[in-house]
Image (cartoon, helix red, strand yellow):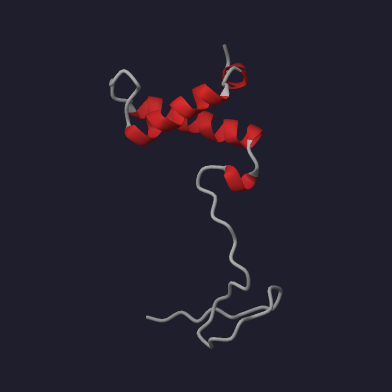
Length: 89
């Protein structure tokens, strides 16, 4: 079975079990995940979410903030307006 076939066989309950294993660092029976198992679980969870969930429901999603800008003038910049970066040491 290749990785694509494995991903196609993941259902919502398996997805939840993989997420829980990543969160706790162990399988439901108490065995600790190896580094390789954790990496594979992460890849499977990310691939499942990409295929089945909208962007705002995926792990690690951070919603964009309106009128986010760089600079210290305190003024809110228009979204497309260029703002210079001022590096401070």
